[in-house]
Length: 115
Image (cartoon, rainbow, N blue to C red; front, side, top):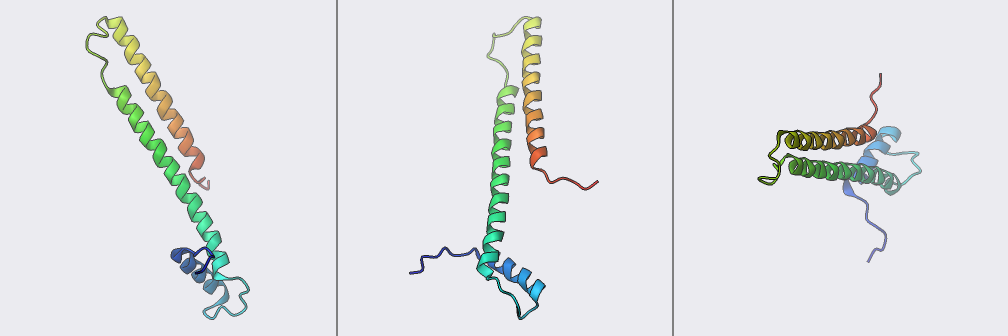
């Protein structure tokens, strides 16, 4: 049984494609292994996937929070117009804070555009 970790087949294929592009079809002169290049590719892909997963988790939490904030208060809890105004103002402030935080977070992970 082989104890060495198996490389991702997609990463191996990408590594081979890259090395063939650099060294030609016969890979003559190539001194690195496909597995070493594939491991670099795998790490990059894994990092990208973790970032995407983190963003998806953020999105799910944001939607859940917005859903809770958009639900009406318990019946009879607010009957005075001033109370309604305060209630709605607090909800809007919370929504604004959540969306601002989400926009700041996504801006940090979004690739920078060349000017």
